[in-house]
Image 1 (cartoon, rainbow, N blue to C red):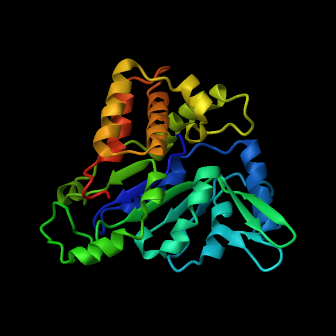
Image 2: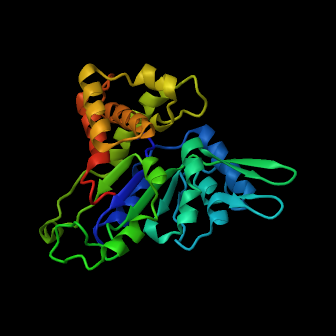
Image 3: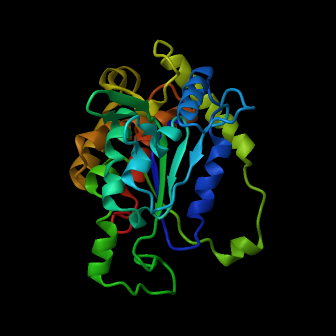
Length: 302
């Protein structure tokens, strides 16, 4: 609903990849402005089918962990071409098993995650491609996958192996990911007795309602942006916290050692939670939930 980046952490087989691949089914429909931008990118990249018109479905890109930095960010010898970051514009870039990617490859994501664009310089020209994507990452808590979990299997990794595995994800990169979600293994009893849950269509309707609120809120900006791209002035105008919420966030800031970027991102997530809740103001309950996404078992979730 707010286009907030997510990392899913849990043991093997817990459903992280399934959750990520189901996400397009609940995303809001593209606006005409977004369709134009995505269509242009795919046309430049030579990936627009001849018989198709405007791209109306949000892209879902899931590159393999052997991808190079150039293929991810874009580039080329003479005339650069859009990479996976730009091909994911307006949609999802899914990195399954993030620590298996090269650290250098992951670090090139920092600029587009912050600015929503990729700039590639050549000797005579500079090319800029849009790259405002929703990053979904998944990983295990350690190489074997069972560190810190409540399973009968015990972790067989040494401290050095765990450190090397986790060090692939740098602090600055994780700081740009708003939601750190633990995905525990599903108990076998629930697999035997599966109940009908809320459908993707029903969830999408709630997402569309929150999206409509954001379009009304940022009507003066082209493209109907999401809460995740609010600037400082918009944060002060649309996401004012009450006294209790400010005190709660200050305590979390001091206790968890959050950065100024994390502070702003928590407020943006709280604004989205309030929109989904149909609330005009961001109250302490919304702030508490947003903080929780940064503080779920710090030992397991980096």
